[in-house]
Image 1 (cartoon, rainbow, N blue to C red):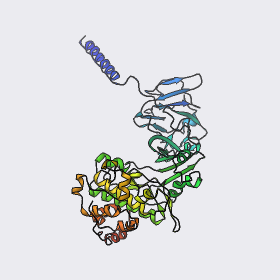
Image 2 (cartoon, rainbow, N blue to C red):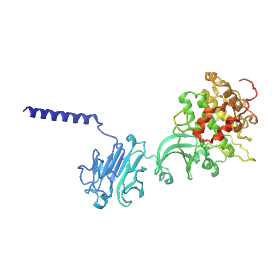
Image 3 (tube, rainbow, N blue to C red):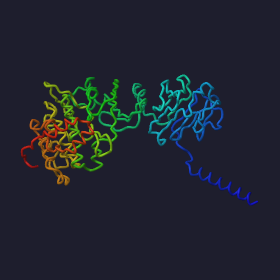
Image 4 (cartoon, rainbow, N blue to C red):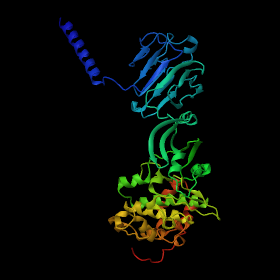
Length: 480
C-alpha cells in the first residue's frame, strides 16, 4: 500500500510540474510565417511536427511558424521530421539529418527571415541553390526545393507587413525591404538586405517630383542629368571617408540609390545624445571629414551641404570611422565653371551664398565655411549662428559675427578656436583651402593621426608627411 501511495503521490507531483510548465508559457505565440506543403504530404501529426500548429486540407498542409527557429530534415530532433510517409524514397535518401533551418530573430516581424542550407545535396529557393552552410533571405511566396531545384517541397508565406509595395521589381527581386531609417525633403531612406548575401544597405529613394517641387526657381531639376547628379557622383567615388554606392536603379518617377549602411547613425544624433563631443573626439572626426572634403575637392566636386546630419558613423564606439554622405547638392566644378545655385542648409551655408542669393559665382571655399560650423557644433553642442542670439541668423552669417559663448569653450584649446575663426572668415579668398586646414597646428596630434591611420587605412608615409607640414597660426583678428 505504501508503495502504491508513493506512486500515486509521485504521479500527482509530476502532473503538477507539467501543468506549472504549461501555465508559465504564453498562451499564444506570434505567428510570423507559414510553410505550405507543395509536393510533400504530412499524412498525420504523429511525431512529424513538434510544437507547431498544423492545418490540413484535402490536398496539402501548412505549418505556422512561431519560434525563433524552425528546422526540417530526417533527424528526430527537427521540428519537421521528414519520413517515408512524407517523401518518396529516392528523395528521402538525399535529405540530410538537418536539411535547412528557417529563422527570424526574436520572432519580430520587423526582422528579416533567413533560411540556412545545412544539407549535403542542396536546398533551393526559387530554383537557386543556397549552398552548404550558406544563408539567404526568404520573402513572401518563395518556393523551397529539396535536393533538386525541380522538387518543390514548400511555399513560404511571410506574415509581416509588406514594406515593398510600390517598389520596382528590379529592387524587390534583389533586396529585402526593411524599416525606414529616416526621411528628408527629397525622399526617404530604408534599411534593405541583399537577398543572396544578406548584407545590409541603406536605400535612398529620391522622388523626382519632390525634387522639382523643392527646386530653387533658378535651377532646372527637370533635366535628367540633374536628377541623377548625386548618383553619378557617388558611383565614381572610392574613399574610406565617403559613403560608397553599391547599386542604383533609375525609374521614371524615382531614383533608388543603394548605399553602404552605417550602423552608428549620424553625427547630429551623436552630438545631441552626448550634448557635446570632447576635443579629442571632435579632432578625430574633423580630421576624417577634412580628408573626405579634400578627396572631393581634388576631383573637382564641391559638396555644398556639409552638416552633422550628412556625416555618418560606422559604429556606436566613440573612436569610429566617419563618412560624408548626401551629395544631392554637389556639383562637378571645372576651371571655367561657377556655382550659382542657392543651396545648402541655412545655418551651415557660407555668407557669399546668402549675400548673392545664389545669383553670383562661388567656390569650393563654401565647404570650408561649413566645416568650421560643424567643428564649432561638435566642440560646444551649439551653433555659432542662431536667431536666438538677438538678430537674424542670416545677418550674423553675412557679417561673420559669432562668439564662443558656451562654458565648454573655457576648456577648449586656443588652436581649435583659431582654426574655427580662420574657417569662418566672410571673405572666401582669405579662407584657407582644405589642404591648408589639414596642415593646421591643431591637427598636429600623433595619437589622433595613428587612430585615423588605422581606421582609414592611410599609408604611414602620408601620416608622417602630415605631421611635418602645418599651417602657421593666423594673424590676430578682432576678438568676437
